[in-house]
Image (cartoon, rainbow, N blue to C red):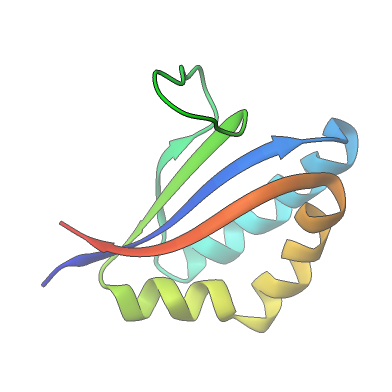
Length: 95
C-alpha cells in the first residue's frame, strides 16, 4: 500500500514564537502515526523558488496523513504556524 505524506515548505518569520509550534506539533503528529523523515536542516534550492525550511512526515497511508492534518488538536496548533510563518502544506501519496 502506498504511504501518505505531509510535506511542508516554511519560511519562519518569528522564530521565538514558532518554537512553540514545533514543541506542540511533534507529539500530536507522532501520536497520530507520523514519522518525521525531513525536518529543517540544511537545504539548497537548485531550481525554482522555495521557502527556507522543509519538512516531510510519513504515514502508513494517504488517509492517515489526511486525518492527521485535519485533526482538530493539530489544527489548533497549526494556527501558531500560520501566525509565525509563511507555509505551503501538501498532502501526497507516495512510495
